Image 1 (cartoon, rainbow, N blue to C red):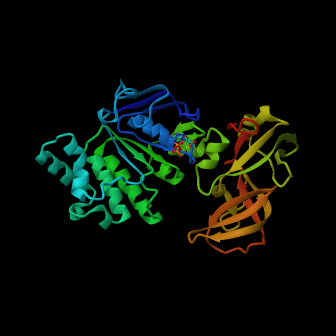
Image 2: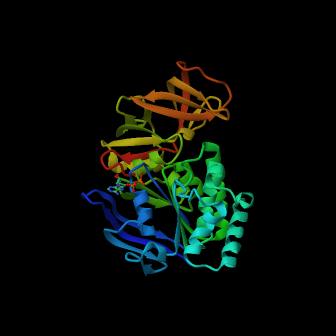
Image 3: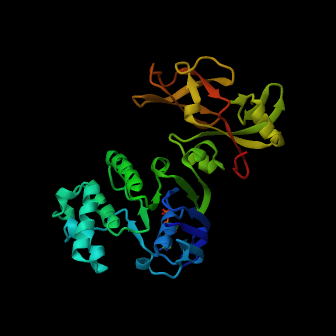
Amino acid sequence: MAEVVLKNVTKIYEGGNIAVKDVNIDIKDREFVVLVGPSGCGKSTTLRMVAGLEEISQGEIYIDGKKVNDVSPKDRDIAMVFQNYALYPHMTVYENMAFGLKLRKYDKNEIRTRVSEAAKILELEDYLERKPKALSGGQRQRVAVGRAIVRKPKVFLFDEPLSNLDAKLRVQMRTQISKLHQRLNATMIYVTHDQTEAMTMGDKIVIMKDGIVHQTDSPLNLYNHPVNKFVAGFIGSPAMNFVEGKIIAEDGVNFRSKNGDVSLMLNPAYQERLKGYTGKNVFMGIRPEDIYDSNSFADRPGYEKLSVQLDVVEPMGNEIFLYFYLDTNQFVARVPSKEMPRAGQLQSIWLDTGKLHFFDAETEKAI
Ligand code: ADP
């Protein structure tokens, strides 16, 4: 059992910089939780407080029900994998993995068994006698993970472990770490700035910005029910499109963007939800995958047709990204790869009016 609980945790660095503000996170036994957010949002600081590498200014952290604020890192039964791997260059792979156990005075045979097990899981058996400089980036990364595994800790902490790897290797390691989580059945806390990593790996995702937790939820709930405009724009790639406008009560029109490029009739469910907003400013959001072109669309009720001039056309192979402007905002649509339209041409597109998101223009909270 290894639950981790953060209660009203705040970190104020010397000089008064508040890096983490009143953060509450409940991590269940065996859960894979991802802390994600833009650079500087406080995710590493949060992880380092769990590890005991940073002091907690206010609040409490509990591991397995035990308050650990004043417990030293080595007594917290956690293992951390860093972005730069932090391997000892003069030691072999075997020695790097064994080092932590040696320090803790484990029996030689026990060390050998544990390192062999980890090397097998991570497919490092053929490299045990090599030094780190004779390994590829991906292999070094696996050694860093191996060093954590041999400790059999209650909790694994990962701080951007894949960001030094190239794109292809990152995808491979992502699936390896997910498999490792299933195999070890351990509690894992993983920090990244990459929303794709967060979405694909996390059982639960904690989205942070400016030291504050904005939303804690499952990947699908974050995607379908973002609590505010920041979360809506952060999760999903390409990002959600936004345009500012007003809720109005005119014949057949319920949302009109500022410059009038978008005028929509809303379905009864949205009308009900937005009725308190008549006359008020809101942001409308729609994801690129909820905009269709004539190749992906058969005229159906519930879809609003607009005519746009294409600004940029990006062929992705399996699909095409169409960029255009509505009011002064750049929009992008993801459409199937059939005919290749040209930049500059006029194009009909359809918005799925069942998939719109609305946000209060002042608070940016979801309506
Ligand atoms: P992230 O991991 O999300 O990129 P960090 O937790 O590293 O963010 O940093 C959060 C904020 O705290 C940033 O504004 C950063 O500049 C600041 N910060 C980080 N470490 C220190 C430090 N040792 N002293 C002062 N400020 C720091």
